[in-house]
Length: 227
Image (tube, rainbow, N blue to C red; front, side, top):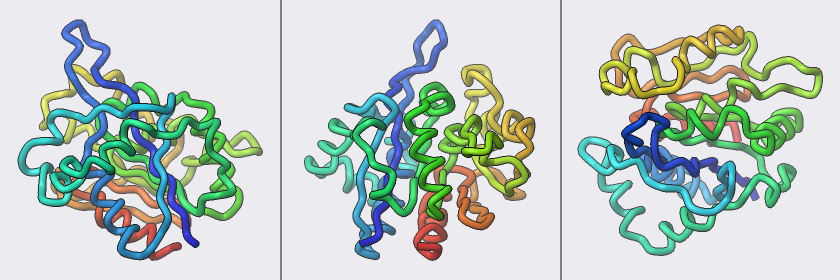
């Protein structure tokens, strides 16, 4: 049985004085979940602190809030999954063949320095599993080191939410850092689509990354192909 571990945020607002709301970008989870479900994979959800994962209000509007995302939100069992996520200490990485980091700006705060998530990621990677992310999910990979001390992303081709997209989404003044720039600083070979907000996914060996919310399905399909 192939098993995929999804990672979602616990953060519900930005760190700014107005405490602008944020959270999980729902379609990035729901689209990937559907891709894996259709292939019969087993799936579970973990978050940095365990427990509830709030939804990003902007992800519940057109165009991201499509039939697939609405179906998730209208399904009490699915929503319960987001109220009762596992914590990193509840997870035995040996149970999973792949890890998939969802986004939403919230993850910029609680993904990068979570040692439990880093441990799970490192163990899955070093056991030959697939590490993947979509949109801001790649913030989880900024500081993840392998057993030899090197950064997992160093020298790897990858993508994630672009700075140009932050500006167009008018959150460039709210985000705590420039994720694209931080990735480049760590030696990652960052790439992006020629146009913002179109689906774009990059595969480098067992590392699979998608650029933005519209890339979730393509990213999941590339993960499934590797599995």
